[in-house]
Image (tube, rainbow, N blue to C red; front, side, top):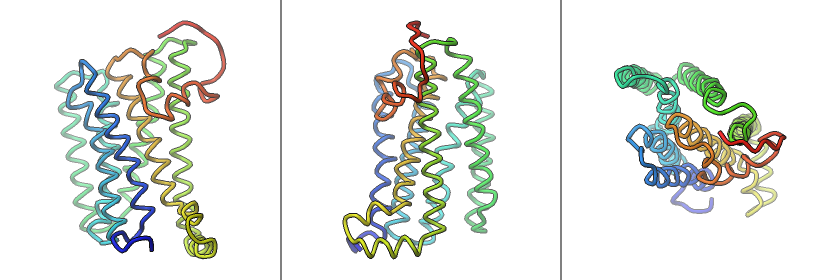
Length: 255
């Protein structure tokens, strides 16, 4: 135990990743001429993930576990709404928002009353899958084939998906090998034991991946100048846009 004020110190501390990226995204939106409420909601959801997850890992109480479980929906649902209404009229946007909000509310009530994770997991996986497919379609529809902008956006999306999936596998391994990892951490001691806190790495990886997808989708949906994307996003998105994830080629055209 590092401190008596947090039951799981590293798992609590690493939630700051969600909050920092959310604050950065919200701050950056202040400089956008068409920044409305809908553009802020996914970042607020990302911040909610960090806060709710931190509350659980500080206390390890049942009611805060419910917040931790449901907080993932607070991010995926607003992002799902944005991709589903990218080309929709204001009326359809409101209707879709009401349907998704009602669905989320029903899932929250059901999960809190039953502590059953199947529907929770199916909704989360379905949302992430739909967001991923819609993002790929929007990239191809809203950027020019072969352009530098398209390669950069694809680079960020590939990296975001890769690091998000890495976090998921680290979370699975942490669950499967919990006792073994705990024994190793006790053997190596601090501070190296922190490196084997795989649940904390899950927070870091998913925080980065979620931020990249939120930011890329925001740019694609809002109609911002795609040439400005890498420079306007937080690290490691600019690096991913220029790295091997962006593919090869030297097309000088801009989208």
